[in-house]
Length: 411
Ligand code: HEM
Image (cartoon, rainbow, N blue to C red; front, side):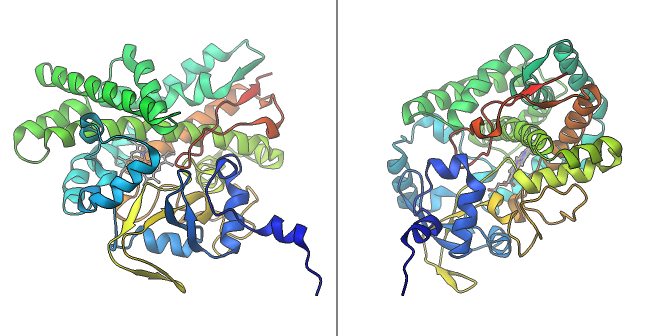
């Protein structure tokens, strides 16, 4: 028997989600899936978990009521998680943690009801003219330049401006919370994350007090009103909701725009097709989300009892990582998954999650993505990558799949 050690080493997937999973998630996810759509793995910090890379399995688990999110029901499990990451359970982290993505029904149902109306397709459609204006102003600032970091100059400021205006966060404060939110997602250490969450919690508490004193025509003022009206929203839930909407509302959409533009610039035939027929744009946005979406692993879930999926049984009290990036490239669900195809049937992609935690902001994100990419292509017919794609760096996170920068030529 000939044993090809080189090949064996090449095909064996890593047992720990490390740097290569951050920089090249699709390759690692494919290797993991080849060894089984659901399998044990270790987190970046070394904690045992289960990773889900198959589409059918991901979809089933995301809507399985035996998977939970509320850490207060499993204090030991989450103490281990904190210990592994070195983080402390400070009062400010707790003040920011009582939000939708950390809650199960019935709390989740009550909290979610308070915000869904603000993000329906109908409500969001009314924002179109303002989003177009913001995009155009940012593009005006780019005109005349040969090259730019598209992330810094366009993909980032657009969604930040939109979510801040919607929530009523003063323009002069945006840079501050941008830094806090970045520290929380890709903190270089627990201390940095601790400082960021303390400052952000203090900032949001003060902002909400100002909204209470002088309400405006914005979502945070509405939420303060709801919390003062009765027992629908506690103070910690109010601060946490503001936190989640701010962070979820901008960290992700930035990457829909940047990853989408990158995918297009790497597939010139698709770029030409889109330029020739702009009516492809809404479908193109869905394909960008499927092909290289902003979220790699969905937020943390754990089992409350053994859960069978396919021929695997995940034990009780296990952490479950559902890789949305991996599921969206499962060839059992999407033929030729590595190919960007703007006309493909993308229905059912998991970039916005699935089940009760399905993204509240999806209609807003879709609208922003469509406007941002459409306006950019209109304005710059010569748009091209300004650096080799093997030099691209991704932010150090297994949650978000976000570029550090994207240098483009504009002329
Ligand atoms: C939840 C993705 C934009 C607000 C989620 C989830 C995903 C996701 C995957 C579910 C996470 C899980 O189940 O663990 C995205 C992507 C976006 C985007 C890819 C952009 C392209 C937005 C925007 C907002 C938003 C613009 C607006 C404020 C939320 C909220 C939740 C959520 C509040 C929690 C929903 C719940 O737990 O019930 N998002 N999101 N997202 N997203 Fe988004």
